[in-house]
Length: 338
Image (cartoon, rainbow, N blue to C red; front, top):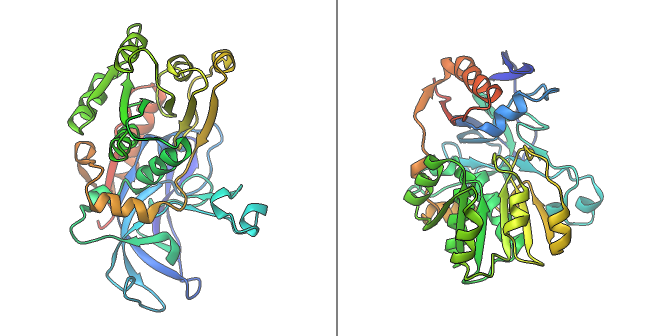
């Protein structure tokens, strides 16, 4: 296996090691594409980064499997779940793995997928229909997390949902709100992000700033949204989520990275808001695959050009430099076939 591991803050090193099957419930997958996002770069640029292989989002093809089945066999193209429960904590032992207190997350506390092969549990790979665009499947973790947000907030038909942060993840949450017949209001401070959101079918897009609260009030008939989602990668102050929420509303902080800015909780206390924190989409991968296969969520506007594997270190260094300068960090899609 050839991969790239974090050696120190902002620096990757190329490694080569052997990965073998770990029993009848494991499969060996040839990673075909890996998507490196700003969340991965945030881990690489941490003051004390985890010395592991980054890369949370990838797709691949099964090359070795102890026992083939109708669904899993050599050559099957698969989406890969980046989250696995520990199986040892109190909740796991009580049969509640979705509440695992020590989740294994690819690229965060276990090796990710910036490598050419991976040995995985059969429960972590998901075949997708032939009519599914594999570039959409790369965003499997976003859809899985978005499903967790929908479930946590218990979004109802016709309900306004404000979403702060119009990244690809924010767009996925907004599109899923539409799918479940809610009305998303997507807020961002970047015109390009808002334009991509509109192209993806999101009607209400608002530029953050002095007039944002008034616009949201107008859309909601003065009531303000009961449900608000703050995408953790956003540069907007999280305090905005509290300000635009209706009293006794429900605010979810959702994403893979830390909230960048600190916020006073006085407004949340005054309004008696309920706060939720959604950091993974454990258990939702199969549903997410079906949604992508049915084009319920469209990532076409977020596709990025495919780059060669021999440019990994060079391209990720550029991402790290942009992150250090607090500039916009574009996603990087790597062809792991060569």
